[in-house]
Length: 177
Image (cartoon, rainbow, N blue to C red; front, side, top):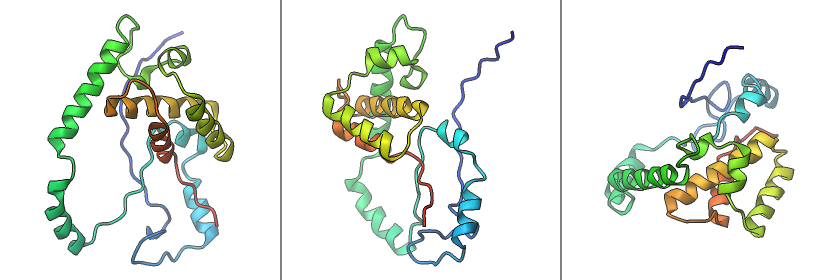
């Protein structure tokens, strides 16, 4: 048996429908429900299940962009974000000393149980989401790893309700009529 180790980050984008305007704030989608479902099924569930973060990006209006540039002084700067990411990575390096892994994404189920303690409230939220969104076991465990990373970015020792709630927002949004 040959093992080909691979460790990579996939960044991908896709339109939500054939015309690209599903849920657009200013333009109407011209696709039928059938076309949208068919289009979204081009990427299989098992592949979607292996993508940790799904983010819907809305278009930015030119006027909004100008206003946002003025407001950007109130937003977190890229320098501050970089500092938080580096601090989170350091937390993970220390957490996983001697484990043979370096990031939360690399955790096996046994390591998730060891390093990702969930309060009863957080566990209940995840359980409810698992039932409501029919999460696979893989997705369920991924949500814990994503929440652990969000907690690390927050500098929190434990995974809180807000961390799990944010992690659950990154699940794929599938079209339903």
